[in-house]
Image 1 (cartoon, helix red, strand yellow):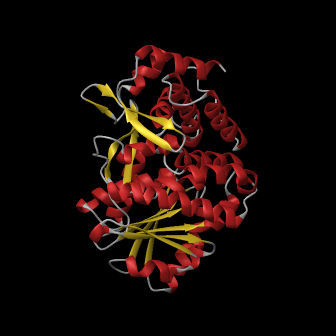
Image 2 (image 1 turned 90 degrees about the vertical axis):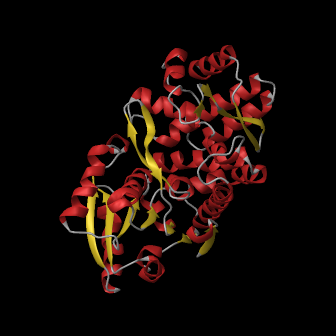
Length: 364
């Protein structure tokens, strides 16, 4: 088992990575406020892994209230959030109850937002079961739901007490979901860890073949990068760089998800296409070479990810991007690359270059 720590003073917590962790109730018990948990999952993950976890907790004397939600990004909304609240209230869960998220990023965001707001805050544990959630969304405390006008526009920062990433859950992950998670893994190499980018280029086929040691290494390296960024800028308030850099490709990608309808593209797929747009724009600004752009495109393709954006039209992209959380005083700040491995936030993008980059990436 690999162990990392996210250092947030009295709210620090461990990130545990390895196989067979779902049956290890002893890893979870120290982080429970009482012997009661609300276990939030979905209709896809629950039949696979809920019994293993619930049985382990039950044997350890912990009462488990299961809450099963519909699966998919389209259900990351108020209706699903209220299903959690309804179950917590119906079973008289109190402030000592720990909300446990068992699933991918949608479940983690929903359960985390419920934990942040139920009775003004209850403890929360993340048990991510997809690659994307293990390397990104389960770490850092961002929770929330989507709004028809924008992705993740309603939510709260609420740090978990523990992140438990059981790599065995990746064995049942569909190939498309595994590839989607690779978009976030590749992101860390692009924004701040160039040696990791080279490692991914050398090992992509093994990762897609689900080599356990390679996946554990990729998860640990990704989480280590994210933990360092979050520890330095937990609430994404740094004027330059900081936690915002973790959003490479996301402003464009969120526009794709919102514009097409949530769930049409997987989040990682939209981020991959958005990353190509950010890289293309960085090239047009004179920061990346054509060879750099080609290198990124090749790696994303090898990971099974799209490099062509959804053809929404540049005007629609700009309209949707204007609702992005990184808009400050009416100015859109984009995460771009000064060089591979060196991301920056940039607010002075010429509109014609931005439009040209979007159009180029949607035509190819």
